[in-house]
Length: 205
Ligand SMILES: [Zn+2]
Ligand SMILES: [Zn+2]
Image (tube, rainbow, N blue to C red; front, side, top):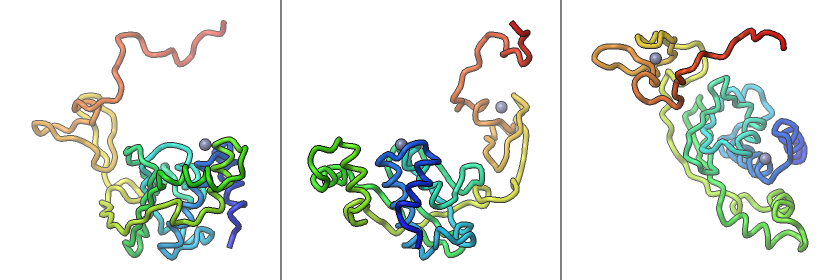
């Protein structure tokens, strides 16, 4: 089995630094794989995994490194709960575990680490050695993954009648019989400004 330190090195390289979140994320993902009986070093096992991460912070990157799950492969799903938690799903068996980082782990870490360390250094020290049960809470769960959320070719592609942009995999909204994208249907995350679009080829200055 690959030593923890090697995973941490890879996670730190991908993420940009070795923060406590990398250690938590690596350990969370290793635990998730172990509980599902999957080997994160086995390419076949990795292809069976889909992970739902509930936060878009440090530990998300570490989970992506260990599991190989990626947003661009539809195997990493971001559910915006703002929680340090993730659900690991074996799409072959349907078995799933949800793992939550315990809030009291921070406190425990400070007591475990040698005195004089900064908070982050204390966490980096303790999160490597704390037992799983002190770091995490684990639940058996079921996740129904709709076919249009699975990896593979898009099942369907339609066009919004208002903006004309293409929409994959059933993300459209039907209003009065018309196909609309979510933005045009009234759920935009952006506002179109009343100014010209940026020039794609600005003159050299
Ligand atoms: Zn970080
Ligand atoms: Zn639209």
